[in-house]
Every structure is written in C-alpha cells, then in structure tokens.
Length: 165
Ligand code: CA2
Image (cartoon, rainbow, N blue to C red; front, side, top):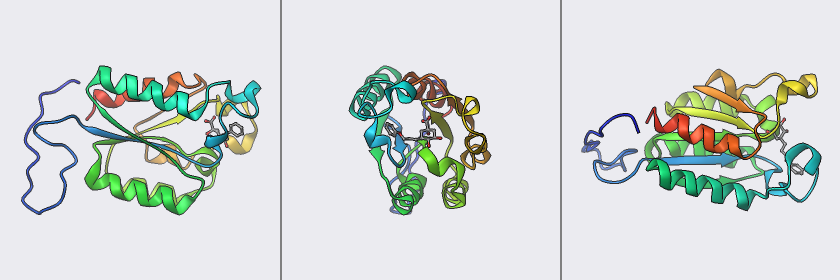
C-alpha cells in the first residue's frame, strides 16, 4: 500500500471503512452466472472455478495487506445492496458484474452513491466479443477496467486498489 493509514474514528457509531489498526476491507463482487465458472464454456472463461478465483484473491489480499470479502449473486438487487454496504464496510470494490455490466443503471447508481474506488474486472476481453458487450455502465463509475486476463485480472485489480485505498 502506498500510504500510512490515518485513524478513521468518526464518532457516529457506524463501522468505519478503514480502521487505524487492521487491514482495509475490499469487497470482491461477482454477478450472474459467474458461479458457473469452470463448469461450462471453458473456451471463453477458462477452467478455473469461482472457488479458485476466490483463493487467488485471498492470497493476493494476504500479500497486499487487504482483507478480501468475496461474494457472488445472480440477483441484481442483492448486488445493489452489497455495493450500498460497501459505503460503510469497505475501502474499495472489485466488481465483475457479469451481464449486468451491459444493462444495469441500478448498479451504476449504487456505485456512484457508494463513493468508494471500484475496479471493474472481466475475465474475457469484452471488446473482442459481441457489440452489446462493448458498452459498460460500470465503467462510468469505475477507476479503471481490466479485461481479458482471466482470473489474473482480479489480482491485477487488487494490486491497483492497494495503491488507492
Ligand atoms: O468476461 C467476463 O467476466 C464477463 O463479465 C462474464 C459475463 C458476461 O456476460 C460479460 O459480458 C463478460 C458472463 C458470466 C457468465 O459466466 C459463465 C461462466 C461459465 C459458464 C457460463 C457462464
């Protein structure tokens, strides 16, 4: 991490996103169908399962001094709720919103309201795929986007966030 951490005591009774002692929490959020990773379409998404990706993230978190909170949901509203929680519970967000990337104004609004740095991740290079995958609502709120590097993209995203949070 780039900077020494300051006390985040805020006196309002809420859990601070960053504590003076302890590691910053990063929410790693995964959207619809990513629970199928490694089980179908290996030619597009590879053979690693989502559990493998979670282990990669945990290992990267240990190395970078981050606490990883890794989650997946097929429900847009649940992802919105988690992004809202990130406002008080996390220092940053890694988000692979799956197909909601290309459709969800609700996720974009939640990210803008959360006011936490978000790195967008895609396993595949969405710009080499169908036109409808070329537009991302998430990118409008993200610090940056990593696409096309498979599970390693999550590690790259955590490395980028470690320099920011
Ligand atoms: O490349 C990515 O990470 C995507 O976010 C994956 C989404 C897709 O809709 C986006 O355009 C790009 C799809 C996730 C579904 O993952 C599956 C994995 C294995 C089998 C079936 C679906």
